[in-house]
Image 1 (tube, rainbow, N blue to C red):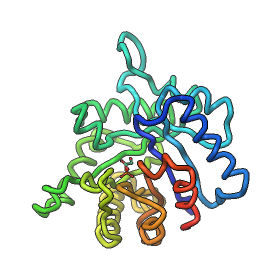
Image 2 (image 1 turned 45 degrees about the vertical axis):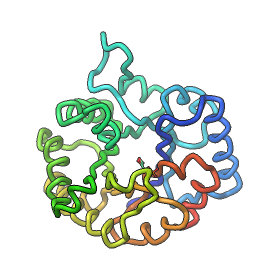
Image 3 (image 1 turned 180 degrees about the vertical axis):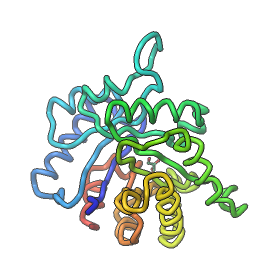
Length: 249
Ligand code: 13P
């Protein structure tokens, strides 16, 4: 039985001090019973916060990005081993902001996914179409290309990858995909994913929805059969909002 996953992607927000205060607020919520054991919770803070969060503990942490290289002369980069040592089991890959602003494409993403798999960590692999692509009616084509250009390179997918459907037009815009649009994309991704890992594993693969998920729309989205959790941006920066998304399960 797959356990839904609720992940908060803090992006480049909060100072280490403010982030620590937010982490502690979430922890108080957890200690007060706000976190159902039926859900897996995860926060993805900036790298600079990870050491302090790991020391305090209590809520699982992951990373927003990693290097495609294992180690060496790559100034400014952070390797999967470094992240794993700081307690990160989940690492985000292919977020649209990285694709768009840092021009990450298949070569970088293949490197990152393989580093993550070598370390036996888990990639949360993001895909999603732009508004223009949706209006052209090529959403499925785009999702399939984003998956294939990376995962066709692996003869065996050795870890339980998490997929995230994040329609670019719904990220940080306050616009959300309708539950029908989201369910349709998720069902398509699951069926596509079965070609890589087989039907049984695909059935148990968690596919998260991301794109302006908030307490008031989370319930409807999370009730859909192929939506297995959320990847939350803005609302994850507010402890009450993040915690009340859990209450929707
Ligand atoms: P928002 O929830 O702010 O739209 O961000 C979604 C996202 O990009 C999560 O990775």
